[in-house]
Length: 290
Ligand SMILES: [Zn+2]
Image (cartoon, rainbow, N blue to C red; front, side, top):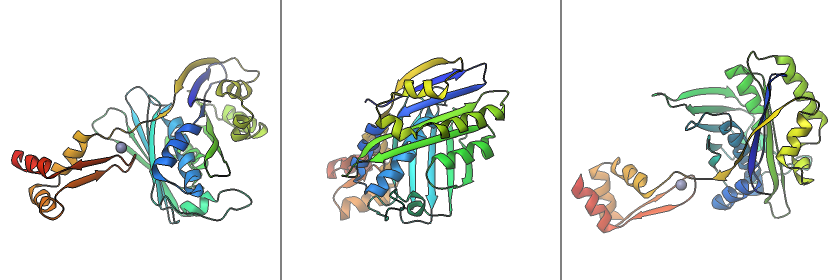
């Protein structure tokens, strides 16, 4: 199945829903960062969270999630936009933590004490930033805490994943339901119980249910409109030009030192591991222009 999300709204009931499948995205990013199975689970869930958050944004807006804790993986960072483009990485990609009750122990990998930082670029001169304590590091419960405490919009997020024997994502995806103004909390309690009654999202995806079919189960008995189907894909906004700007911002002396000591400068993108090499000639040209 291709990665995509569907958005729906049940106006009368006062709730919107997003369902996504992100298996290819997770495997793409995990492959780039050579993550261990535990790190794939942590990163995968955060990528799905990012895709769901991105789907709530208006066009050209962006969101970044950072889950940071005291555990060995240290942190996971994900960025997403309103067009379904997502990228991300973890602090320590080769961390492996023993399974707990047959599941990847994400809470121990991230750490019990930690923070979720949500940064939004909504086209204003200043970014908006909000910090909430981590609930579990599993992204969905953390986003639930963020929405209910920080944005104060009744919301339920459920993220699921299953890895295969090689540690790759077999399925990955998520559900987000959110009250629409005037924000009736009861509908979200009702939707939360419905999500609990249904098989977990990873089981639904594994039994080949499409996001549209999962949405139909979620909104069963309610009138709703399917608004949009949008592909989700890995995309990194890095470029040689941006890397050159980063190099220039180091200043003349630092560049001269790089030229002298290394004979070149290599910028490795955190998000996608694309390497931008500036050789002797490039560095001399940059220095001349400075
Ligand atoms: Zn990149």
